[in-house]
Amino acid sequence: MSDWRQFPGAAELDAALAEHIARRLEEDIQRLGHASLAVSGGSTPVGLFRRLASQRLDWGRVWVTLVDERCVATDSPDSNEHLVRSELLQQHAAAAHFLGLAGACSDGPEQLEQQLAALPRPFSAVVLGMGTDGHTASWFPRATNLADLLDPANPALVATTDPVTAPHRRVTLTLPAVLNSCELLLHITGAGKRELLHGAVERGFPVASVLLQNTTPATIWWAPQ
Image (tube, rainbow, N blue to C red; front, side, top):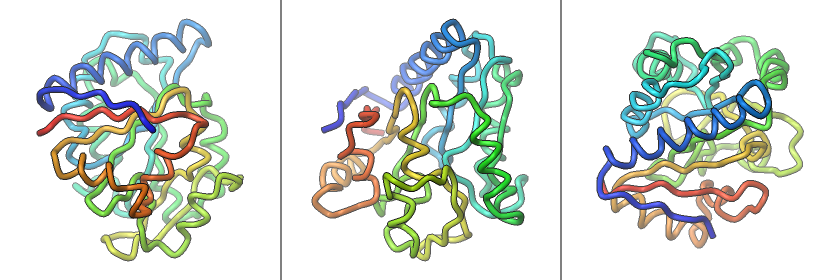
């Protein structure tokens, strides 16, 4: 089962996780000459993004991309790209390279697949969140192509999907793409999500797919609020 790292509050969690990610990126920059990071959207990572943006490292050697995206305009408040550009790609992190996913909404995933394949991989780190329905990335419980998204043998890095139970069509990394990382970090807050995560395997939630695998064991970073 995954390791838990618990903090007294979200501020302490954000600070510790930002420093942890920065160290991971710096290690890869020193070792490989580059680093890559895939992040998720939502309200939970805002504090993390602000902390990470202030970390001093050679951001010009870092590639940032998204775990998933909504098929909306990139200046929409619902856009994960908008969130990342507004909160993460600021201060020192403004020098990072960024690859968004929204192009696959109109053009299909083929070109994006090639662009993702050209990024430095395995990812230095992938940061996931989790919804109250047990989804992570855009792997929603009722998505018609969920089995394909979670298939360990799926050669695709990215796919489009209809969440059915949430607004907007999505673009999402597949499970194999997410697991092709040096470190997998599940970032959640609140007692409700902790309880949900404890029951995720038994209830068959999509997030269980990252809890049950040993390719890249997930570490859960949690605070009560």
